[in-house]
Image 1 (cartoon, rainbow, N blue to C red):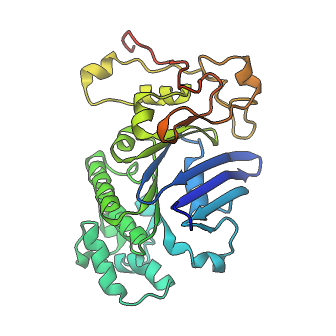
Image 2: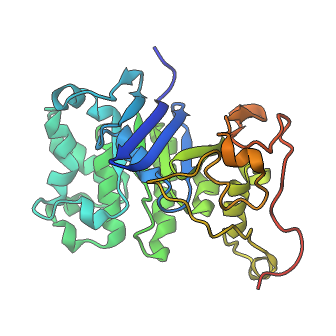
Length: 327
């Protein structure tokens, strides 16, 4: 019996010539939150959809709570559906407008032929901060924040071991984003499910995550404990992401200088040889252009980085500017 909520090995997902995901290995322990971050188009959401089997991977393996679900057919997969759920980015698009909120939240229970769904739906709604009467309403009658709470209630009503949260706040008003993040944090603490939190919001990552995995053009370039990633990012791409993240102090924000990356943006249809980041990396060397870097462990807690220029002790290039004012 595995002690992992999720185990992904060498995951590959190609859409014809597009190599959206190309060899991702990821593990999540029960009760922990792993944040998957990176630019738009890096493959984050595709990884999440492969994990919940909305997409069947081209290659690799996906195990949820010890059960391999990579290539199960629809009937075989049904027995494992209750172990993994997903919250989508756009609550309006993920809730069927033909159904009431009660029918939407209770659907996972009906699919697994569970009884007393009305009581469980009411409890699920209370858990996410909604009154039970909301069950009688239609999704279009709710605000964006309320709809996302309904999505969370539906995802958690079957008590999954793993929740995939795919940019759960990016479609919401700024005023309600913090409330939804606080709700997720409280539910994760109280219910103890593992969570893959897919986002580009690094402030949310710093608040929620135990582990951070950084993705670039279909591959993981760095992953490790949140404290280590934020305090000592090793990969130049991770350093660039963190340098671009805004901070709440206006004076500090004005004094910051983001890392300037090259503008030679590669394509997922024809990724560059060697390190995929070398076309934009300010410190790339000849080896980076020809040899694919293997992940190496550089610290405690499983901190790994795929970069030729980072030594085993974690020393390596720091491309972040140390002085000057952003223009």
